Image (cartoon, rainbow, N blue to C red):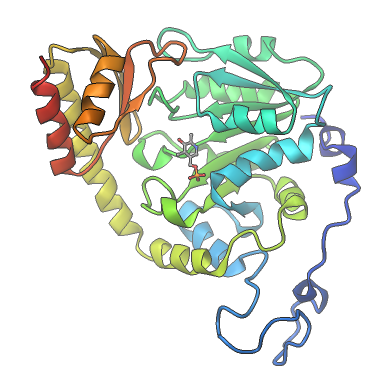
Length: 346
Ligand SMILES: *Cc1c(COP(=O)(O)O)cnc(C)c1O
């Protein structure tokens, strides 16, 4: 890896971050808060929340096995996807990023918003990568490589040896989005951060943890990268309600385990049923709470399902996903409704 200072945008390296009222007395005991122009009434909503979310990070640390100083919490993964661009990539050039294709759409949206060149590298016919092909797409101005494993929308995990090769051989930052790792048997990369100073791993409460509404994303990285994110983020990026609800949810990881088990059972059942459907040509292997299925006519089947109030994700227009629908695993009765509708297709 290049020294961090060489990778970071010069204005960000030099940035003097906003110093909030609560930063300045630096942790000493206090009882009377007349510093932040808050209203003294309407507890607890009257007070600004902890800008570094230390109580919540301690809970995340316990569940995820990552030390507090290597945790960044964002307003959804969206914030953790945007921040690497803002920290490392100069808008308008010359910096660029490399990513697998197809993958999650936000990596490219954030590149476009930040006016950064985005270089997609097509997966092979098994939706796999090689380190060599990805590294070939880089040049001296490549700051970031985006990987997603298990990948969205394909569902499969990327070959771990190839991911590791990319991390070891690339001089810039490698981001591995493990939003679906809770559903996968693969060993998560967040447990290997100490080996890889250029690695950022993303997680979220939006999928297995059942908390998409509260918007809580996580980035795990070296303490230096986390410090950089903390400098650039909005001061109070995680609101109090989200911090409180996330703490509640993390208290019961066994509930999440139960959901995951149930969803994986339903996933097997649904995939087997799809393979029996005359209108389904192929079901792709998955490590996530969804699967990709190649249909005879994805657009027509999608429209037919919408007419019956059942919404799946039409990925027909995505490269390598021609005639594919992406099916999220729902409750047993939701899955049965989907199957019943598809069996009635004429
Ligand atoms: C759903 C998803 C996320 C989650 O995004 P949030 O902003 O945390 O809700 C992140 N990455 C991928 C690949 C996803 O599919």
